[in-house]
Length: 347
Figure: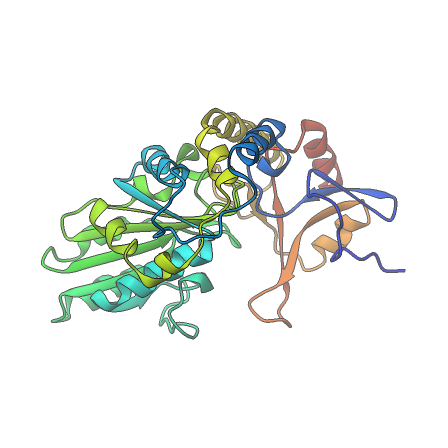
């Protein structure tokens, strides 16, 4: 009988019990283990008691919960931006940003940008890899008579782990006006010592940097965020999408505001787990220092580990009939004995 792993009826954690069998779980995007962090759960419960289950009103309503602006101020401070905007999902944050800013100039998409960033259908890109794309982009912009450009990209490739370097923008002529939109959904709270990509992106007079992200991954909150200048955030708050959408649960934002130390401790634990695991790896693995995803190019990898009651992230990409992408994902909820067992299984 085939085990059904697509109808799990329990919270994800370092272990999952299915048909009476306990599996170690090394998948998902809860990099900091927040969904199982009891201190964070307690904060969320406090938020529920203060604000109730949800708030189905527009952020433009004449009567408002102040917790949302409090959360935006805290997010801006924590992630090094002038200002911030919080929505009910990362997808919504990306869509309202792209649709509002794309008309400012000629749009160039980096390869493999997340669908949340797409204006319409799959964007066409001439380059398959980021390193090729940035070289082409420099030439394309500098040789064009057009002055205004909108560049849209992920901050990293989390499938074949690679953190992108945007310093190439310094080579673009200073008379070109650039709006840079970067999706940091997989990096925020993890990369850059638990910060966000916003603090690492080039700060030049001719470049307007905007970072969008899901807060539902490392940060453990069902919400989306936009980081940018006060001018851009004020403009985005006037869009029909922002005005027409309900905000996320106030309880989640309350927990986020009060969880800075929880996030910091979880990040430290995650880094310990990463070091523990990487010390046992050989050179055939692909990973980025400090990021908890590890790619291994072997089609039967996941099936072999299931035999040892270990589940990893495995799905076909980019097409349904493609070979599966097999990755081990570490989280702060993993214990040293979990990682030791994984290492033993790999050996």
